[in-house]
Image (cartoon, rainbow, N blue to C red):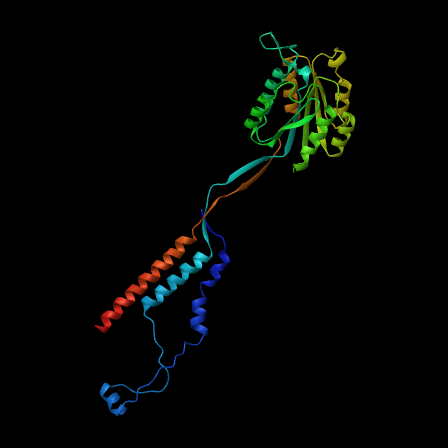
Length: 326
């Protein structure tokens, strides 16, 4: 499909006619030659002398070529363009932060795998999260890991395959052995400062009690709620554990409720997989679509045709002029 970017410029097409019709002819003074016996010469030539200027007339060829060149110039100024097929771009309307506990207790091998053998908690969690990430096409996601401190392992990205790579590099204890749930929530909220979407979700997974945060999980959750951030919390491991392995599941439940989220608990791989599937259903993918049609500017064709026509006209006129003087 070919259209004009500036069709209103076609109004310039009749401009030469208006100039011919309403503007006076171009005047140019030339030197005259006095000829003796002028009257006798005109009588011999059969001409009747008169006073006034001589108006030169163009040939039909010159007029047609001039109008053709003018039409091509105006058409080029109007910018003809070829429209391509519509291209639709879908962008995520929700940003998700995965906050993952990698404290020392995540090294426990008390999760049952598909083959019934005990597996490391973090290994199972990473496997389930990978499936969750793979199902979230068009979402922007970030990964935060926390132990004694919280770190941004991967900033917001739509390249979810690269997020898998960052998840593979995550190991137990790389953020120190303790648990800083409140700091992880605070860091996730700050990560959303660069977000331009209204739907903001944190999925926080932990198997322990907050032992090293500078801000309590409850206070961090209050800030998150004030910023419009929803937190889904997942507790994993042994709820009957004591000592350093004790879990504060009530805190995780409170964090979720304060932000309008939901609390879950998983004690094996199947339960964890079921939870992430449930979260996926609860937070369907939201996208905003923008479409555009790529354009190819064809003005160069009109400009080139005008140039070729002008050169061809000039060449023909030169040939005629030489023949006339030969």
